[in-house]
Image (cartoon, rainbow, N blue to C red; front, side, top):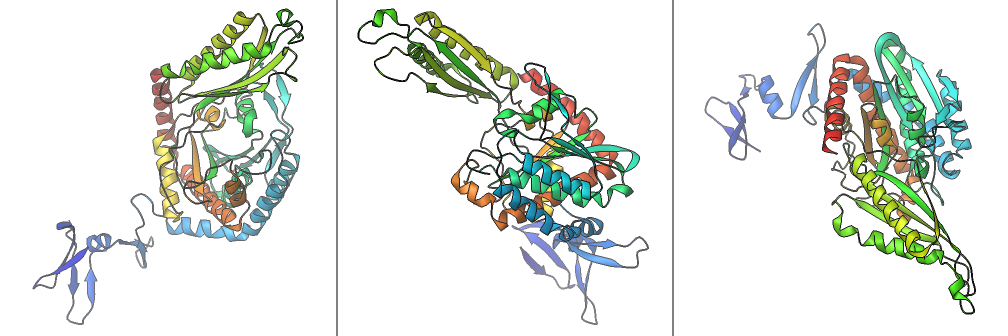
Length: 470
């Protein structure tokens, strides 16, 4: 950018040779510079006046649509009141990793904090298995609620806290921390707001689809908008998640001595190998977004006995639920082929499916703009395709997932490097910032019912479009 001086002492702000703004900066006889609002904006600043117009505050414009008001700045500054508490909780969850649906320590820790901060708490709610439709008690789930004044929206925050074998290599300790930070920030303001804040402790994301059980039980029916975070290598919203589910296939054959009487045996392993090859031969005919991956878990115990048992897992993924089900049907056909070819008996069962998300651009932009306003860090579209039970929630109501950076670009979850990053002080700092962004988004939604209505209408249209495209 350059400034061009003229005889009347007016400066035209220009960029790349074209006039950016016709605002002026004038030099007074006293030697002062006078700038009009257009010139201020061209320079990247604006004036925010008090209601009586007596005092103006000069503010830097960080990004279009990404400006915080003085009230919002004061709001997020209150994070210092409990940042130590949140950092301590994150470290304790990190140091005590628990697998899906076994997160007793993390659940107890978080519930105690919410109770101490005035939330009404429902522990061990009844979930419903999405496949069998059987109700069951989700011992490590919880719902913490804080009511404001009547008449406003119900905004949800979702926390995760389960680990992978070997530790928090997906950083769910930080999802819990970010959600906790947002909830405690909002707790101070809820009494003055119209609406209701609902915090969901959602166990079993890793391989158990805990949120799907909660959706099936109707736990999100009264929620208008849901927010959640996830650590990664960048800040982003609007990312794709693939719909997925996993088949476990078991073949039962007939054992026999592989040398003395092979003709009396039926090889379960042969059935698995035929199935494996049949699936591989289908890859030429799959859509570009399809993912099909599997392995043989069991294929016998010793080479001189015809294997009488084989077991394999196959996962299917796609950008929409309908095509994912088509891939599942292909797996079943190939599994039947292995059984028919060898005469082995076949049993096939499916895991709980993770759904594809319904994206709501207005909600995603709101959250990302607020991340920009808090100077979050590297903001870049997320183009790595994974799966999450978040998709099941987002198919029911407007939902936004905020990725926040805790590691260098290219460092992916489920790696040793990500495990190390998830336990760092820097990661806790990023989680606190993500919590600020979520709290700010919720605050704006509480204060703007019209925006909530727009988001809900957009969600309906996006969902209908996704179904039609499928």
